[in-house]
Image 1 (cartoon, rainbow, N blue to C red):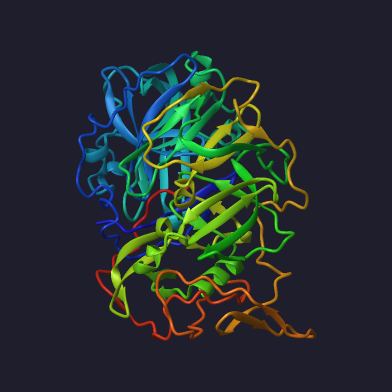
Image 2 (image 1 turned 135 degrees about the vertical axis):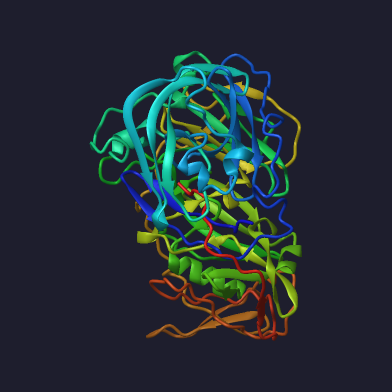
Length: 526
């Protein structure tokens, strides 16, 4: 049984390690890959309108998978869909990579190079993930069916060897072509090697869609599936206004290699009260990445959130809360993009909790799907965030549009995306000023606060008079007696930021019983 885990993120020419939880996930849908599915039953054959292509995504808890048919005769393979990388690759049948993958090739499919007539492109493929995981293979070209569209001569890597502590699953990277391994040099060993037309580009080249664009609707955490809509936007899958913003360019080259938005505020609220954890001047690039399970925020902001929520930090730097804190329907986090007039996405606290095999003071414990530890203040908003948003990526115009999602709706109104942009979106043509590239800090203009009694915060920053805030802090689900609780600090924190104590556990001393620990399993995080 696998843990709720991640491994690495490929950004440009480097890969950074992730923090892996070592608690097993229970009662949070099905443990991924524990029971083999009928892989052929999951293949989406959605009817498509001209200029767009829809395909199902399977919710495997720690990732979202898309089913494709490869070669002739067709070989059905389930791969992770990943906006944070740009290459398509499959494990090779009977290879060493399949041998170390704990039966995943049998469950999810693999590519048999002896079947059909793939074209060898004489170009090696190599990618390395944090923790020492390495995947190697060779670029080939063959037929690939996605949804109802059959694409010919698609470039992908057939991977035979590698090293991993837990096995690997193939990847469909749908990011910028400038992020391909051949461009950054990891695949060919020759930095700056020529990029190739990846699978999104092939959809355009072969007339399946009209523009390098797609929309993701992951649906709620308990839904079995969501969908990806290539070349289109579904106006019935979101509420409010779809706001389109420029992609944040690479701070060094000025080019576009990753799909990042300008994040300008992070807040938590409940019962009509709210607290913002970022300064009024905060602005940082945030990678919107379907290949990452959790949210990765700067350590000082994570410390402030963990302390406010009074999390219990378990082995592996895992933040735990009593699951009952998710019972408050008003408890949520709000993420603001590109300034006060930009997009705002609410994520309910209950959707940020994954039940684990542990207890806190005798109560069932859940892991909070927010952590830190990424280098240089890197911000990644993975599936834990993306489920609450409807997101349209327009790679042609270097724009990303975002709106509050609608969960579990069967309504649909698909509009094609062309070179002129995302239909119906409200366009913000410029980025907020003062934007940092993949860096961030907690609020510096909000004095450190500590709960001192019912209805007020008091602060005593050095060299200033005490400041009173009369707002009562939110209480998430469990009514306490006003105790401040213990501070939770990320072990890799660069600094510690105090913030109001959202009274979750009250006067209880947090004791934790951990059961069924598993070693650091690994799933791919790009």
